[in-house]
Length: 471
Image (cartoon, rainbow, N blue to C red; front, side, top):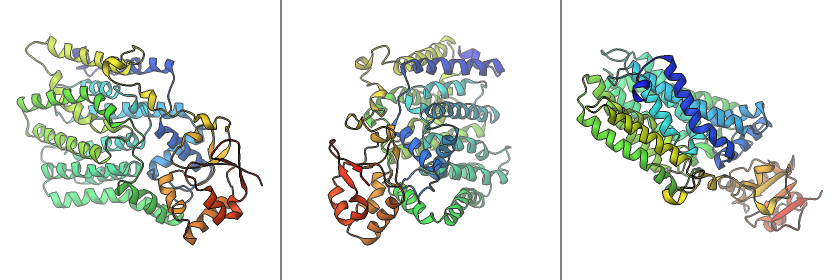
């Protein structure tokens, strides 16, 4: 099978798509579980589709381009979960083929073909986390697109005009998921090892990075939401306060990373013991090592709990795995290794169907999906607000106020002794008060006392913590 994918014929690409779908599509028969990050994206898209402006009419830290994408998808259909899954698969496929194209065109490895794309998609199929359309996955697509612009077009050095494009793409990626701005360090290292004038070239890279932010800042300035952009997106993300716990628990992710970690370790050892013919190939090897360090730093800062964290490591993993598939004295060894990796991915991915959760000590990933809250089953199709971090009641209902992220909502609900906070509450509730209010934080008595014109209109229902608008 390995020799088959070492060819560049179009039939190999078709076989790659068939293999990818064969691994993933059968899981659809057992249902598609809604993840927390997808529910959050659906709610953001729903609010933007209703005319809300991010950071002005919506208290949320989602990056602006990711929020705009969710809002655009909402125009296609109401809460289009199927479209989220299809787009996530297409983005992963694009990343794999684009990275494979860069590897082949730059001659970073003696052997060409679709082996790089095969390794990329095979390791990406290890977890359902990468079936999810997360801001990280969307932003990482632009990072992959920027890689080719970071490499010189000739062995003499850079065409400096391409550096602005590389910085621009990294800036667009950061507008999808702000921590991806750390990949400027990869760009800096590429400039140092490839460019003749490193300082001037890096300034050009930085100018390209800042351009998308200048455009975004201008938009938010004219929509009177620039202060909210800084307060609800930039500051929480830079201070580590943004919600990054929507992914799998850290201990589950670490166990899923055992197989990629072993492959990476063996690939690293093999790469340093394999003589590379060209100076460019040595430099690219160093660049991938820096990529791996930056990805590890991003995962460590986010505590590994952002949805889609594995995608950060896939390019470096794919590159170093190429040294495992290269020609060996015993030609059957790489073939057997690839078959074993494919079998391991299938077993891990289908562990629930095969009833191997206890053997592998890996719980089903569906355990961490969003399920309806049993106490609020009678609420369906209602406009409501949850005073608390639990977003499950929104699964079958609509958000009626700007207060989506409870942590960011503390700018108002956490300062009820201040006039400005009470005034903003009154403004946000006056035009369209929610039909139901779920008080998980126990704030309703204080709210009814301090803002009686709004919250005095709510009365208790037979369900604890649930209030209904009466007039």
